[in-house]
Amino acid sequence: MNGDENRSRDEDGQVRAKRSDTHMGTIEEQYGRNFGVRSDVQLGNFLEKNNLDSLHQLIESKLGRK
Image (cartoon, rainbow, N blue to C red; front, side, top):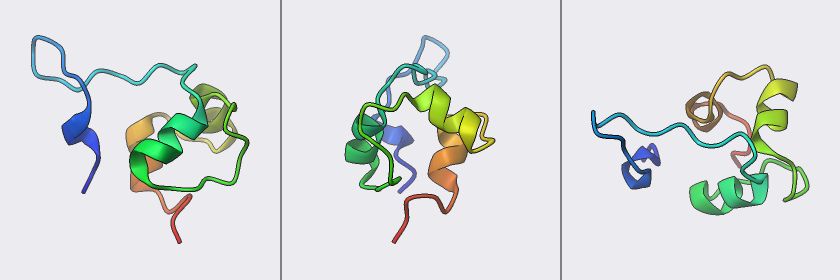
Protein backbone atom coordinates (compact mmCIF):
# COMPACT_ATOMS: atom_id res chain seq x y z
CA MET A 1 0.00 0.00 0.00
CA ASN A 2 1.51 3.33 -0.98
CA GLY A 3 -0.86 5.59 0.98
CA ASP A 4 -1.53 7.96 -1.92
CA GLU A 5 -4.97 6.50 -2.60
CA ASN A 6 -6.45 8.48 0.31
CA ARG A 7 -4.80 11.81 -0.58
CA SER A 8 -6.81 14.55 -2.23
CA ARG A 9 -6.24 15.26 -5.89
CA ASP A 10 -6.36 18.40 -7.99
CA GLU A 11 -8.39 18.82 -11.18
CA ASP A 12 -5.73 17.03 -13.25
CA GLY A 13 -5.89 13.96 -11.01
CA GLN A 14 -2.44 14.68 -9.56
CA VAL A 15 -2.02 14.01 -5.85
CA ARG A 16 -1.77 17.32 -4.04
CA ALA A 17 1.50 18.04 -2.26
CA LYS A 18 1.36 17.62 1.49
CA ARG A 19 1.91 20.92 3.29
CA SER A 20 5.37 21.25 4.77
CA ASP A 21 3.91 22.46 8.08
CA THR A 22 2.01 19.19 8.59
CA HIS A 23 3.04 17.63 11.90
CA MET A 24 4.92 14.35 11.81
CA GLY A 25 2.44 12.91 14.31
CA THR A 26 -0.21 13.22 11.61
CA ILE A 27 2.06 11.54 9.05
CA GLU A 28 2.88 8.72 11.48
CA GLU A 29 -0.81 8.15 12.17
CA GLN A 30 -1.85 8.23 8.51
CA TYR A 31 0.87 5.84 7.33
CA GLY A 32 1.23 3.61 10.41
CA ARG A 33 4.92 4.45 10.83
CA ASN A 34 7.08 5.64 13.73
CA PHE A 35 9.77 8.06 12.63
CA GLY A 36 11.14 8.51 16.15
CA VAL A 37 10.54 12.26 16.37
CA ARG A 38 8.26 14.46 18.42
CA SER A 39 4.78 14.58 16.97
CA ASP A 40 4.94 18.38 16.55
CA VAL A 41 7.99 18.30 14.24
CA GLN A 42 7.02 19.75 10.86
CA LEU A 43 7.19 17.55 7.78
CA GLY A 44 9.29 20.09 5.86
CA ASN A 45 11.92 20.20 8.60
CA PHE A 46 12.01 16.41 8.86
CA LEU A 47 12.40 16.01 5.09
CA GLU A 48 15.21 18.58 4.99
CA LYS A 49 17.06 16.96 7.90
CA ASN A 50 16.83 13.55 6.19
CA ASN A 51 17.76 14.88 2.74
CA LEU A 52 14.40 13.96 1.20
CA ASP A 53 12.44 15.98 -1.36
CA SER A 54 8.87 14.85 -0.74
CA LEU A 55 6.44 12.87 1.37
CA HIS A 56 6.46 10.26 -1.38
CA GLN A 57 10.22 9.77 -0.96
CA LEU A 58 9.75 9.49 2.80
CA ILE A 59 7.02 6.86 2.50
CA GLU A 60 9.08 4.89 -0.03
CA SER A 61 12.14 5.02 2.25
CA LYS A 62 12.97 2.59 5.04
CA LEU A 63 12.65 5.31 7.67
CA GLY A 64 10.10 4.51 10.37
CA ARG A 65 9.62 0.89 9.36
CA LYS A 66 9.88 -1.94 11.86
